[in-house]
Image (tube, rainbow, N blue to C red):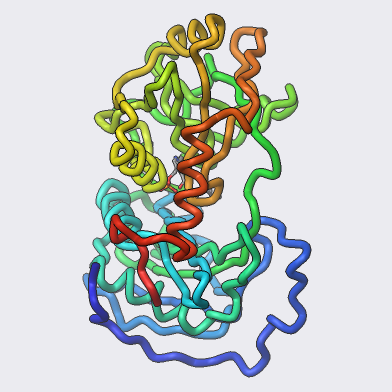
Length: 356
Ligand code: PLP
Ligand code: COI
């Protein structure tokens, strides 16, 4: 993990919004802390960044990101630990993924240390927004977008990198019902599915909305070419427990986001001696396991959702109900372990906590 390399000038707000804040009604991503980080890229280099009061930004109507979608983002969380420190979970991993997304989208690289130090200083300044409430956290949203004022297609030559933060509670309030998607596609091989690119989320909204009309919370995406292989679920990677094994799609496909939560789950499970298979998974295999009772568990893993148990899987007009959540020994144990680790209740044996 980087030690502090970058420090940024700070202009503090004279009127903190925290005194008006209603901690009992946290809609995910609707409220914002007092400050934001902002930095511009022009003439082939990043200019010095700064932390300023949270405010609207102005833009030219021809701003390139609005028209052609050069826009990427990250999501990570700050948690208050048991001994009242602020912990950010694995920010170096988000910094690396941000850089990979930038490359794929023809956007300028951003040094890992700069990303991490900007997050650290912003969260440090707005530390009051990291609540002690159990299960709540400060969601950190770094994003970058092209700002050229040009209705012509080429990579933008100017960009903004901004970080905003939003206090959040649980993303899903109950175990989720998911539908295995057989027609629509989130990402195709050779496309940008591995990047955390804004357009991937835009493309997923219509199919997800259709599934919601049928009573599902989300989709499980399948591969674009055949719709036979499982990819991921909404904004989460997906892990199945068939028998005693945890099985999840491998990362050799450029259609799947390489999730940090999933990697953490697998590292914990591996350390505990749970058998893990990272490989292609057919829809058929999952449905067969659901039918013959060997599908013990299925859950999504993601920063916003943490570990989200799947209650029911829909496929071809059939609904397959999974075992009760309280019986799911491995994922419940991992969820508790991750929560304890982030909150500093147990030793950080993996070195994942980043104390501000
Ligand atoms: N897949 C998609 C499409 C996502 O948006 C996310 C959320 O970030 C994930 C997977 C899970 O990734 P992570 O655990 O790094 O948040
Ligand atoms: C995250 O888990 O960080 C995500 O990206 C989900 C988000 C789109 C709400």
